[in-house]
Image (cartoon, rainbow, N blue to C red; front, side):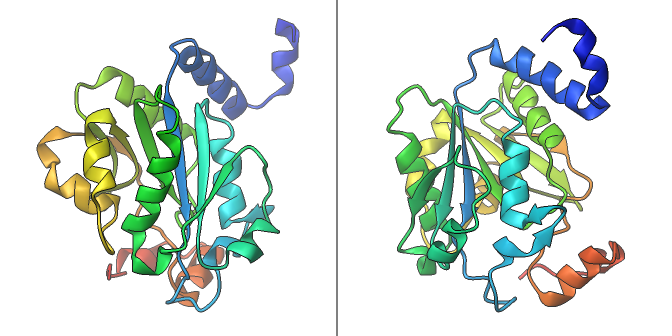
Length: 232
């Protein structure tokens, strides 16, 4: 591609390309673990397939992360795995089926991490969920850029006076992640090691889809609904 062709892409594409070229030259050994194993019990149907843009929530996360130079991308499925596999928009992800998904999110994190660690060069992982519709490549790239500069072992998104996902865990935390049990997710690990956390602002990070009311509010752009939402 010659320089003149750059005028045909939009500003965000230029931004992504610039970050990708910069980060890619630095030999980043980051694996992405996209968690999509839950049974959406509060919704009653797979939230992963709720329409979002020209795709669905899971497809949108796969598309946005495809703009980022991860060394590995892993999709962890569990409940609805057969249905979700038939609706994949990308074959760039390695699939991991977590048959213990009903024991909690920790089992999916462990399953994804055990898979990516087959590559000994991986020195950090990013955890991403399917139900935060405002996650985009720009946020993921900012998390990676912060990780490169920071001496902290965890790079978390910050929103609504809390810390959470998407989040990057560096290698010293792999042993903790492999010991996680039950419903505890990445947020609990972040909380236990708050003094070793650096942050990236994600103003709409509190917007996630758990119920039909949440999805209805999202489609109507009623973002105020999520300000009063209580986390279970």
